[in-house]
Figure 1 (cartoon, one colour):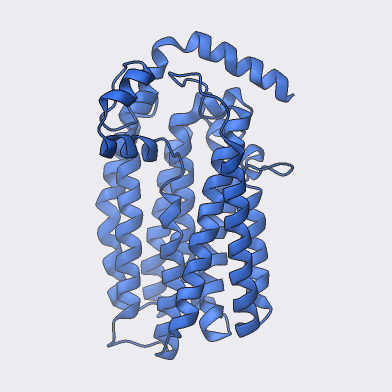
Figure 2 (cartoon, helix red, strand yellow):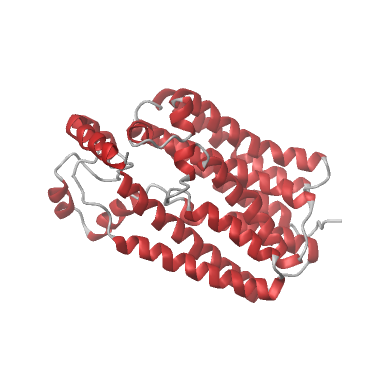
Length: 339
């Protein structure tokens, strides 16, 4: 099966022709010049920006910090205190984990040929050093998890184990969640309930229904981001057998899916306020709604063109950032404390 996929990828590259322009259009400042000429023509700063732009999941490198921060904010609102060393240790563990996720995603997707089908340059497989970077990052995250479990109890290891299984096997064999249509759900659980509740337990030693409800805000929003991020890669993912939700439902339905998921994430906020679980100040998170509307309009016009679809992705990313920051700010208001 692996060899057959490689043949399909090579044939697709030969037929790709001008389709590579869409891929180039996703790199700020890039043109359709040959790869060698492009590299020589860019300044060091532009080269760094171009490399960062080729990292498909780069947003998730820092997206995971916000759910962790949400858990810390909830814990502080509950107890009025926050253990500084524990906070920074947990943050270090999250950073190491998301670095490991990114390294594994890039390495194993490269081996499968994913997102390189229409590459303007026939690049060699990614170095095994990237895989070892991921292993080292996950090992560091495990060490942090063990330390925190010693300080706070075994449930912390349970949350770490769930996150590790999701992160390591997102695209890595033998499970490959993303190739089985479960990748988006795994991301939603990892960046939503598992990370937020794990963070809350880390500081309070307890869980609550209110914290679970709060975790649905990043859970739905991050799942929406996972779906929208795959829309421009529809053809590549189809060719290499990556049966994610976009491949299964098609790009047009995927637009409706990601908008619906993001809407659900925002709707959780007024539901929680109405139920008395969140303070009224959290309603400020709804100021992100216009960004969602903008993304939906852009996506409806451009979902068949990867280059033109980029603004829709940027708008939903901003929606996530604005909603999460304002939601956390509302929780942290000193005038309100959980009962």
